[in-house]
Image 1 (cartoon, one colour):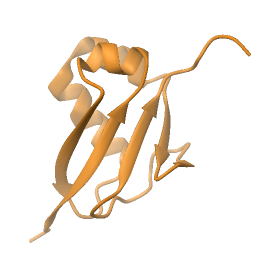
Image 2 (cartoon, rainbow, N blue to C red):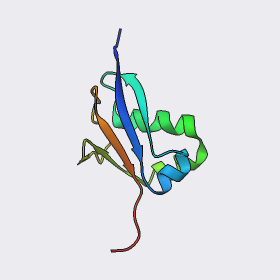
Image 3 (cartoon, one colour):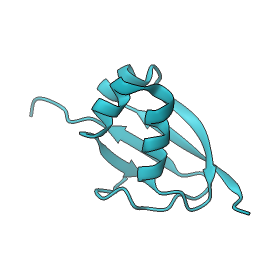
Image 4 (cartoon, one colour):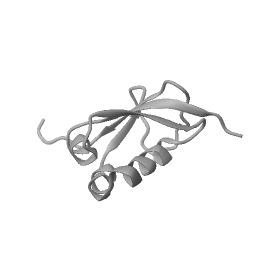
Amino acid sequence: MTVPVQVLLRYYAGAAAAAGLDQEPVAVPAGTTTGALVAEACARHGADLVRVAGACSVLVDGVLDPDRTRPLAAGTTVDLLPPFAGG
């Protein structure tokens, strides 16, 4: 049996607008990947987040996870950052 762990998922800019909130605590099984976390959030928040999340960068405790395969542990913070315009 996999023990659930609490992570903090933070949304920025268009991702926050699509999700309807800036952040949320999420309980996931230990070892869940960032990709699975984002997919689960998309399933809960709907099509707008699905559309935005595909273009987002994912940071885990401030470190880029470009392939979204990092396993999550208790207390991890995951940031969903859409591309920003400008310089």
